[in-house]
Length: 292
Image 1 (cartoon, rainbow, N blue to C red):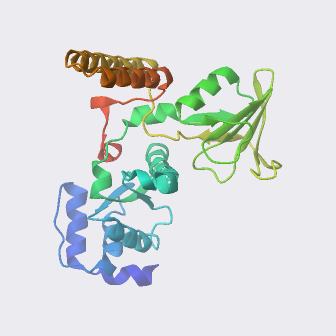
Image 2: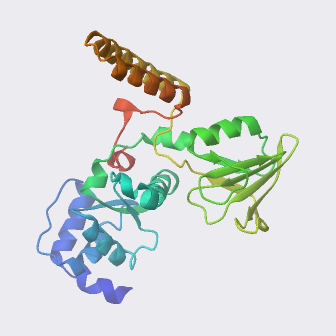
Image 3: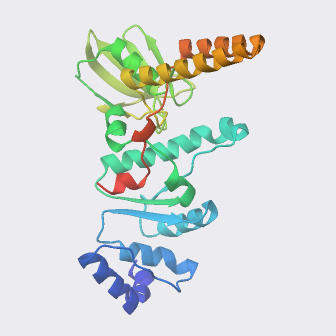
């Protein structure tokens, strides 16, 4: 590795930058570096910091820099922006969620992390760190396990109950057996219970349904970024109801009877099925995961 870093380490500008960062962390400008040299500089300048955030102007430059950073840090991760194009959601939505949630988990669970992202992604609102940490489920052998409570938690975390687990973000329950496919896992897990105690945890092949490997513990990340508790959910539903009632009365007063009843029927249907909502002003950005 030294053959790649020695020429850059000899630069006096880099030495001055590292000294400044060590004594007075602040914002410093470093200009004149070509794109090929930026991974070297970013890696060397931040080698004394366990958590590093690299922000690029767009996705193409971010991914180019990511490829270069992998030479110095094999665990560097890319944090993509949310996909707001609905026609792409079915194609890329799950992949984007997986990448974003894996980054949030590494920032809350690891002792070090390097994240490459874009300005757009940095401005996306995400749940506070403490909310995300509470949403992560860990199950280990010999744990006392409430299957009914776990079913509610998995649904709240964006998992769909199915008859047979085939894809990420699905779970199935058969007697005292829970199958769950965590979003970031390569294979689903089968958790077998003896009464209310976890007897064994195994990975299994989603196609053949045959067991692959026994493990001692499984970590289940949410499939969605915004996870609501009951109070937040109720507050969101109440706000929707009040706004809908106001609009309904206005439409009726203007003799738009058909539109008024369509609105009422649509809102009532949503409120009956809603299981997700918003954090409102508590939403933060990726920067909050780096800054305590």
